[in-house]
Image (cartoon, helix red, strand yellow):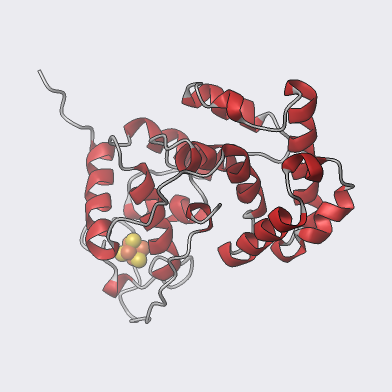
Length: 243
Ligand code: SF4
């Protein structure tokens, strides 16, 4: 007998369907990016916007012809190259640590050893690097390895809680509750469109509820129904533009 989908799965499916109606299926490059490129791009994306982190990633790739060359540099040189992304000291230390640890452990600066592992094994391996958390590790799984895993950043955490998919206090808890109930094949559209919803309609202060595509199913009890705030298109997503 076929099991009925649980309420979380049903709600995710409905949200995914409404967001695809609004935004369409998000762009996805034909060839997924290399896992190590993705890991480094995601480290760079912490606490900044996608345009600045994209520029920092491009600077790094242009400056060093390989990650081997970058690993041999002083941390301060990496910091200079990624300045535009902010938190330069912290991010350059994390990048340098990933590169040198890979070299030391595998005698090769690559993440090719993870591709045949399961999701949990990959997450454990990636979060063992200093400066790499659950969100960064899960971005490698979704964007590079094309697993059905939804990374949870501040937008996904806020919107999933407001809509009523989860009731959690932290992004990591949202990740833990959301992912086991994710319907097959929806992770990329759900994650990407939810981020866009969070940037354009469901902002932290004064969400534009009156014109939100999820108004009829959203359970947020502090909806902003008083003001109609014009939204600005914001659909550039760094992690689908890494080459
Ligand atoms: S109705 Fe309002 S609170 Fe709910 S998802 Fe839309 S913008 Fe966010």
